[in-house]
Structures are given as C-alpha cells and as structure tokens.
Image 1: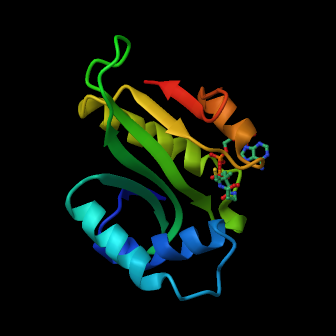
Image 2: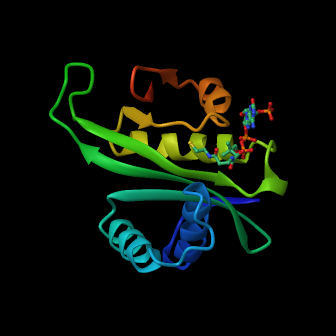
Length: 145
Ligand SMILES: CC(C)(COP(=O)(O)OP(=O)(O)OC[C@H]1O[C@@H](n2cnc3c(N)ncnc32)[C@H](O)[C@@H]1OP(=O)(O)O)[C@@H](O)C(=O)NCCC(=O)NCCS
C-alpha cells in the first residue's frame, strides 16, 4: 500500500468518493463543479488530499481544506484544517488505512503551522475519530495537533 499526497490524476477518484459520500453516486450533474474545485484548490494548495493506493488503484482518501481564522490564544496562527472526503472502499476497510493517512497528514499539517483539525462526522465514523483523538463538541469534532 502506498500512502501519498493526491495529484491531479487522482481527481476522478476523489470525485467518485465525494459522490458516494453525498449519496449521489450516479448523478453526474455536479461533476464539472467538483472537478473545478479539486483542480483549483489542489493547485493553490488550499486543499491537501492524501490517498492510499494499492496496485495502482486509489482505495482511500482523506482531504483537508485549509482555512485561516482570526488568531486565538490557543491557535496563534489562526490556521485550521477542515477534514473531509474521508472514504475507504468497502473491501479495504478496518485495515488501518484511514488511520495511517490521518497520521501522515497530521505530520505534514504540523510542518505548515496548523495546530487544529475540525470535522463533521458520519455516525459510522465517530468511533474511529474518537480513537484517533478527536473530541466531540457542540457542532463539530476537533483535535489539537
Ligand atoms: C469510516 C471509514 C472512513 C473508516 O476507514 P478505514 O480505512 O476502514 O479506517 P481504519 O481501518 O483506519 O479504522 C481505524 C479504527 O477506527 C475504528 N473504526 C473504523 N471503522 C469503524 C466502524 N465502521 N465501526 C466502528 N469502529 C470503526 C476502529 O477502531 C478501527 O480500528 P480496528 O479496525 O483496529 O478496530 C470507512 O468505513 C468508510 O469509508 N465509511 C463510509 C464513509 C464514511 O463514513 N466516511 C466518514 C465521513 S465523516
């Protein structure tokens, strides 16, 4: 299994995962909007995406939208990563793939001065996020890194 940052050739699979997550797997009406988003945000680095690849096939992804809020005492840079597009194809689940992607990504985000990750969890993924160290808040889960 290869764990690496996503590149533009991964965009079709990132879009497939996004459509499955949004319960619209067979709906192509948003494909152009998704492609434009992934194209522009990967190139201006406002999105960092990590993928796991097995034998040339991307089987899992974890994405982080990077945002800058007003600084707080506990987060002086104001930088926050919003985690999204977290998906592993069914026959690769429970093999530690997302855990490994998150751990690789956290190391990389820290080098960019990011100290906080936020996310909205599906019911299915909540135990996993808790295991990874995320804490449930009123409106979202978060982890200081
Ligand atoms: C949730 C999901 C992303 C997990 O991906 P994964 O690669 O299987 O995750 P990991 O193998 O790294 O899981 C690590 C740990 O999280 C926990 N975990 C993962 N999936 C779980 C589940 N369905 N139920 C309970 N715990 C779970 C387990 O503790 C697991 O470790 P273990 O298998 O040693 O017990 C995957 O099941 C998925 O794509 N689900 C559908 C989409 C989804 O819900 N995405 C999240 C949107 S917020």
